[in-house]
Amino acid sequence: MDLALSAGLSSEYPGSWQSNTLEERRRCYWSVMLLKYLYGSASGFFTFIQDDKTPKPLQSPLSPIETTSQMTDTSLEQPGASNNPDDGADLGIFTYAIQLSEIWRMALRYAHRRGKRVGVLPPWSAQSEYAQTVAHLTDFETKFAYKYRFRPAKFANHDPAHLLQHRDFWAAWFLVQMLYHSILCLLNHPLLMSLTLRNVKMTLVPEVFLQHTAYLTATHTDWIIHLLDLAKQQSFMLYDPSVAHMVAITATIYLQQSYAEDPAVQSRKQEQYRKCLSFIQDMGVYWPYVKQLAQKLEAFERAVSASFHNSARPTTSGSRVLIDLSLFWEIIEASSIDGLPKTADSYFGTSLTIYRQPSHSAELFRSRLLPEPTHINETGATHDSGQAIWSDRGDNTVPMASSELASSLNNDAAILAQSFFAQGDDFVGNMDDWWFQANTG
Image (cartoon, rainbow, N blue to C red; front, side, top):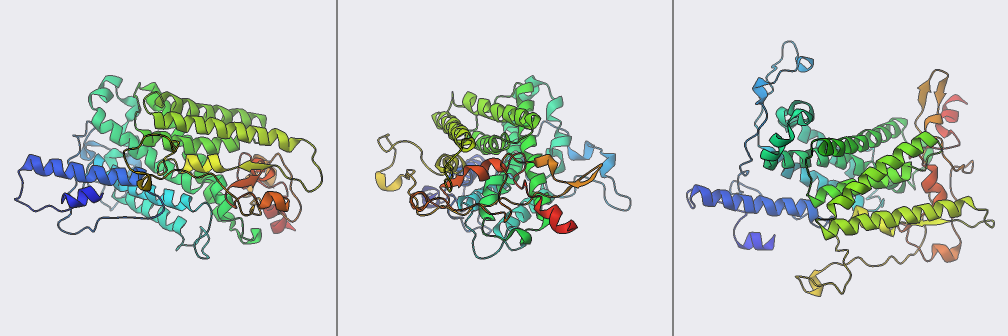
C-alpha cells in the first residue's frame, strides 16, 4: 500500500495519461485495495483518503448474462412502483467484489477480537460492531445490481464451456457469492458467539436474537455447500485461496455441529465438513498456503475428537477436559498471519514478518451455554431439535478448571470440552430448557 501511495496510484488527474495507461493504473490501485481487504491485517483499518482524485472504478469484464432490463420476475413486481431492475447504476462485478471484500474485512476484524467485547454493547445493540457490520452488508445489497444476484444470474443453467469462456466474469461473480455468505457465517459462528456472550447473564439474551443468529448460521453454511456443489457440477475450477479460507471457517462450524446427539444430524454435518475439507485439500495442490490450512483443519479435528473421547471418560471430581483453540484461531485468522515456520525464507526482513506465536495462557474463561430458541411443533413449544450431548448444571454455568490449568491457558485459547460439544447441532442448545421453563413457569 505504501508503494501504491508513493507511486501516486491513489490519485488520478484527467488528461494526464492515455486511456489504456489510466485503466492500467486503476487496475493496479484497486488490486492493491482488494488484496488489503482479503489478506491485510484484521487488527485495524488503513484506508486511502478518497476524494474527487480517487481512481474511478476499474472496467469489469463484459457481463455474459442478460441485461437487467431483459429480465422479468413477476414475484418482484409492485403495483404503483417502478419495476425496472435497471434502476440504479451498475458498477460492474469487479467493483462489487471490492466493496464486499471491505465488509469481509470488517467481519474478520470482529472475529479477531476473539469474543472480547469492545465497550459494553452486546451484538444485538444497534451500535455494536456486529450490528454495524450487518448494516453495511444490507446497505450493500440495496446497491447491488439485480442481474448479478444468484437467481437471475442462473449460474447452474450455463454450459461449462460458456463459464470457461467467460471465466474472468464468473470467477469474480463466484467470489461475490462466497463473500456474502461467508460474512454471515463468520459473524454468527457458534463458537465466536459463545465467547462474545460468555459474560452476559443468560436471562438478558433476547430470544429473537437467538433465533436470528441460529437461522443465519444454518442458512448461510448451507449456501456455502450449495455453491461448492454447483462449482463441481459445472466443472468450474476454483483457484482463489481466499475462497479456501472462507470454506475453512465454514468447516469449523460443521465440525462443531457434527457432535450433535441426533445420529442423522451427526452424519449430515460430518458429510458437509468432509466436503469442505476435500475442497480445501484439492486447492492445496496449487497453493502451499491452502495445503497448510487443510492440515490445520485436520489437526483441529483430531484435537476435537480426542477431547470428545476424553470428556466421555469418568474423571475425578472437579477436573475438566479442555479443547485447545489455538488451531481454531489459526484457521479463522489465516489470511492475516504468516503460518510458516520462522526458519522459512521470506521476501521481507524479520521485523516486517508476522509469525504466529504459541499461546501462553493466563486464565480460562468461564464458559456457559446459551439458551436455545423456542421452536414449535405439533405438541407445542419444545427444544428437542438441538438436544445436546452433555447436560449442564441447573445454574447454567460451567465451573472453572483447576488453578494450575487456568494459569496455563488464555481466556481465548481453550474452551471446556463439555461446552463445545453441548452446543451440538445448535450453538444455543441447552439441556435445561431455560427459555421454555422461564416463560411457562
